[in-house]
Length: 315
Image 1 (cartoon, rainbow, N blue to C red):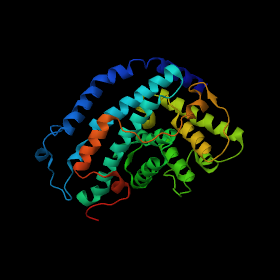
Image 2 (image 1 turned 180 degrees about the vertical axis):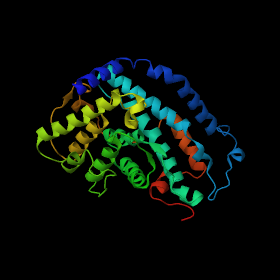
Image 3 (image 1 turned 90 degrees about the vertical axis):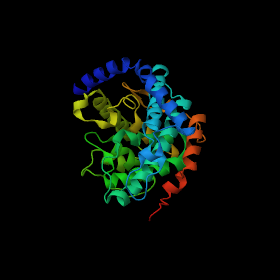
Image 4 (image 1 turned 30 degrees about the vertical axis):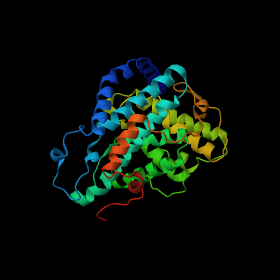
């Protein structure tokens, strides 16, 4: 009965999403203009105004945040709207959402690595739990190396408390499932962990069990996405992922990548999931503006390969 009420609320909420992209359009365009200003040397405030008395000194590009996070969120909302209206994932929006997230996370990883050197402690609650879902974006696009890099950051952060986590455990599930897929050993923060059985048996050949697991993940997401903000379900509190079954899609995708059969799965809240996996592997492609931004960042010392390889000045 409780699930039925949550599903009704979920579906009503889903019908009211039509203006979300439009409402986000102005701030999106403002941040694109800020990125253009950054590229031509007049963006952000002047470097002299950003000087902070820390060692190692901060790079100018470390101050980029909303300039990257807002476009990432906007493209994710476009992806969600396209899925709701057409029951398919738009590859262009998926790629844009992922690439802006990827550059943002590389930048944040650099700052998180340096935080103990600058302030003598780890930074707590540096990012919200739903930000981990960019692993799912990359998995759907077939960008294995980039997902591995993000997993390195998120698994390290999971153990060091970099994430902001209250109720809901889909963030944990995504990190722990990917760890198991990579044959890594990563202990859950909660013991027992509510999705222990799914993590332990993710590669089962019993398709009835897989259907059961997918149903659990989707039902839990419906309940959390339909809940008011006061419930503290940070995984789905910003609207970007509430109607996209990230955890279930990742389970299906990792099984597919491992050569395992999947059941056909349809959920009353999310529809038919299997067709959402039918995306050919894509090359990592920056849009023209982000390409210019990354070039500007590199002129100022940014190197994502060094960051993910933990080549850090001062170590």
